[in-house]
Length: 410
Image (cartoon, rainbow, N blue to C red; front, side, top):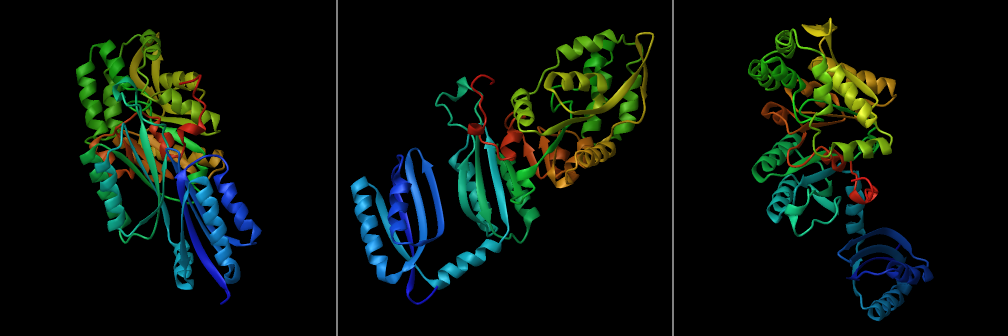
């Protein structure tokens, strides 16, 4: 930038309509200026447009005069601000700072929730560059719809204590009934390709082994062991062995009946439709049973199922299982294996689950999400969804409702 050039920032606001940006940039083009930065947003048909340009100081007065006349003609407000060399240098240097995406998700969003989140960001010296709404507009009569509300903050800076920042957001999530995802805004966030789900209490709203136990008349005993295992109080493999043993003698015909009546978690159909439409590879990694995993695989067109195989003799369960148990360690190994088979970096993977045996895969995935999870899982996961259905995962991936043609589907 020479002594004969100027940097000028223009801020334009007013009722949006087609052609406004073209009108102002056409004037700038006549003076052969360089555009140094540009940004635009539209909120309820109100335009906010900012343009930073460099021009020769001999024409800056004419440029501003022409822009002002055009703004008056169009009924638009315009402001001019000179930018110094030092101010521009600070802006350029700021580009090297880390960037993060903070996603806020819930049934609805309140001023208190947004205030709390932005206050935490400010306390950790993060600057908000942009705010974007990912969901459609919320109907006034909220009780008549399964509402979802999500906004995404693009933030810049290098927090001194990233884990402390996450902990404060999780505490706010608990106190105000809102979900958060804080992700580094890098190439991997935009290129997730493989997603692995737990099955029981994640894709379905039940634990299948509990359903089998009720049919076998041992529901209370099995349920107590299941809950203890999911809380991480006892070893998963041992708890699995104990529970399967209690199923001895159950007729296998009940498995088909249970499968056909599985309570599918809210949002699963929408989620799977979108993931498959956009080419994601989808896997079930379950401590449950392959029979039910394969049922869901067929129903939703999934790519992989890894679960446990129950031993059957003469049409009845023996109380034993075949092969190694798919426990937490095995889930993490399978996640790595699928990533290798699909030739993707582990940072391009996503893992979603609710139990303590899901923590290993949630921990190694590029994006690990605790879904309506047990306390121990929420305390150790970086992201969680507790307020809406499983399709909330889409917003953590950056999907907008407007990306998806749902007119005939959902």
